[in-house]
Image 1 (cartoon, rainbow, N blue to C red):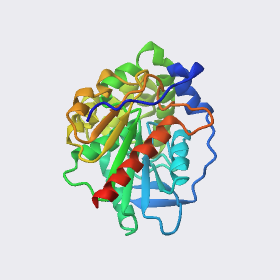
Image 2 (tube, helix red, strand yellow; image 1 turned 90 degrees about the vertical axis):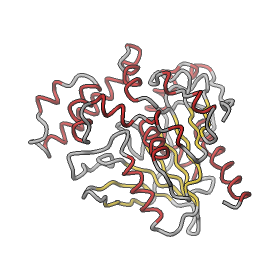
Image 3 (cartoon, helix red, strand yellow; image 1 turned 30 degrees about the horizontal axis):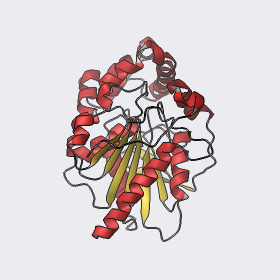
Image 4 (tube, one colour; image 1 turned 135 degrees about the horizontal axis):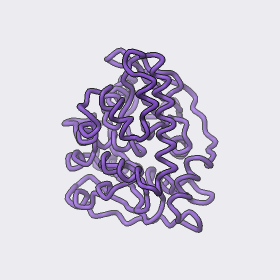
Length: 328
């Protein structure tokens, strides 16, 4: 597909990547609440929780939302997308990855950027409702990587999945980690480290034989956390092995449903590999849109939904219309 021309124009201080990223993550308020929660029992004995909201009793379409690192279903970017889609006729299933719903999961493992088996479990759960004819996916950051990997690694995804949108997605995990380690990203990396170490300390009290307080204390970088916990707990040799096997960049050419990748050019979290121009040009299904501004999930629009919410609905609705006309 040709590279998609963007319509996003940032105004004033929101041309600054840090302003747009920080405002969206910490100051944005979204008036939306979910009406139900589903607990999904997983095949390995663990669980994850979905936040649900319903447009109508007879609705046949649903959107699945996937959050980012150290996030959950109630972060402003998740609520904003949920609200915009529900107001336009969609049911919502907003994922909390393992241990992200306020209750620690049962196993030592938790979630990571390549845990596509958990997305598959959510999709199977929704299909068992024997209700939804149309399923769309939207993933943010780490959740975007997970979603894109899922779409590219599956030989036959369920026919109900019609389209997908990935927002502010690090397509090369190792390279994006290097970007986060740069001085201009100090405030973000420190916040991630603080939140992840807090989670590890809580996990240590439940699994004291697996990890020690001393090991956690010594972690002073995201790489160290991935070396100590993420890679070991999820069956990878080390952090490098985890990044290599779970980065979606290698799976993008295999995606075979209409998919939009929306990454701002000034997103300080992303490396050059997160703008796969050549892959998009040679794909029938991957649409790449690169606004000049927007930071990390910070596509602010005054008195409107954020641009990524507006764009996601537009892209998915267009594919819904095309599928209906073709009889798919």
